[in-house]
Length: 266
Image (cartoon, rainbow, N blue to C red; front, side, top):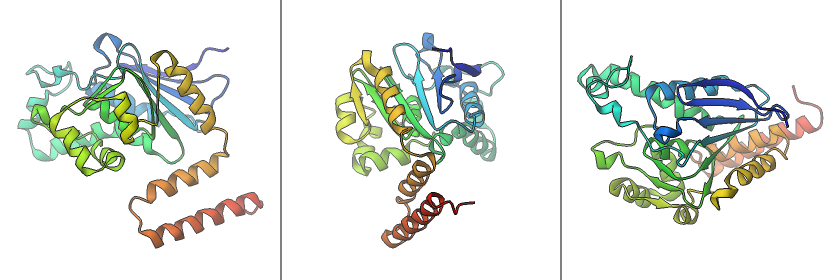
């Protein structure tokens, strides 16, 4: 088997594409010594990884090296000195509101591209997925979890709120009441519960996580790409459409698929 092609490797993020099947890309959080704790530099690298995806990629796997998927935000962000070359979060809070809003929007970009209709994203989660780590797992379309996975939204416990795009998918998956309880208490949601309440699509023994994720990626590639793209767009749009609007969207999408199959597409 050929080694994967590395397209990006910096700031704790590595993007590789399978050399034998360019339809699968892997984004690895590669700072195991810090349990893949996140920083603004990591977020910029994650954003760049999305921009660098080859057009051939259909499935993106997100994984973390080491014992944990991601232990959340590196607490150094809240020290007076912050990170080298980065504004301290404490200093950011003292600046103009418009600049703070701009910076948070920039950070959120690392969490948004996983929802693109042209790819299906799969998070392979082991160990802790806390705060920003939980939100990064939620950014993906699907989650395969090891039986030792533990999710927690600790922002509220620290006097903050989840602001890295995690609140929308959390409410969508588990409902408002359960989402509020998870966030307000900051408690851990273990793998068994995560599967039961809809956070995890699949839970497997830790030793089988990579194989199970690879099997899911292969299954996602079995259907024609355009059909998967249209189906993902339909399902995502169903959240904001009413019943009649969704019926119309289904008809339009099916019309495009039938035209393509009949050789009438653009």
